[in-house]
Length: 154
Length: 119
Image (cartoon, rainbow over all chains, first blue to last red; front, side, top):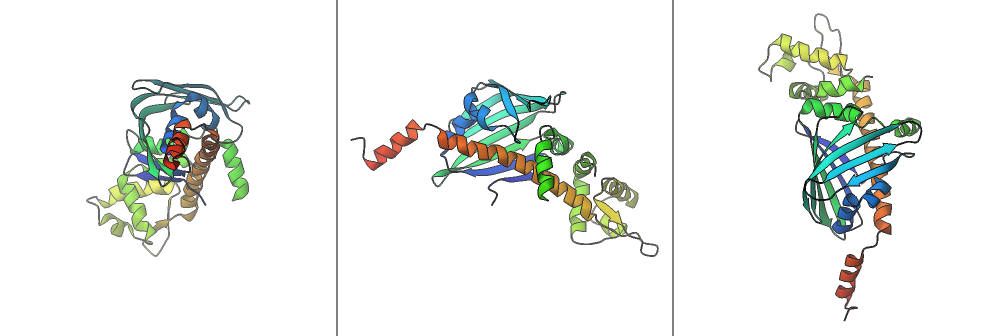
């Protein structure tokens, strides 16, 4: 059973949803406390986030740096725009590969769902072309490991 | 399979509509052109992009060249999205563990008050 959904909407949106057993307050903290973010926002096995700057206030900076310890590295920068504890976060982000990708506007909602939380992440890219590029290459880095695992599974 | 080409091909609404039509079954260029206010050459150009991206294939039927979805291309795209989903799922599985180990004093307090333990 997969609890996660990933789908495109309209010309330039990507929507990700996921259910969690924890309440919205915990989800909000896990997204805005750098010590917590560092523990989970890692993608495939073998990657770590040695640098995690996360200033959870309007205009606050975001900077995540990932490495796989084998020479593979990339980073993401962004800025917070709106924060509504514990239900909603709006921020802008871009990947550096190493050239920056166009800005991705992300609205993350944490809605109470029974005793847990339904998280809805709505990404808005400048246009359809950029979304296509993001889906095709933007998250490619650091995914070799999953790819290898997936190939083994199919 | 070049996924850059595949996703670029999908970045155009007309091409997505063509794919949606072909998902219902094979169609001629003329049939594909009908719902759009476009000339046949314009549609042919879109079809060429889709063919180059490995999403559409053509069949020879006398003088006709009906188009259909290319199964391999669609599956490759689907696999890529599955992989992307799995990378995200991996992060969120970790988040489940982080959440489970988090100290949640406020939440515990609320639960206690609800149970009447704080009086």
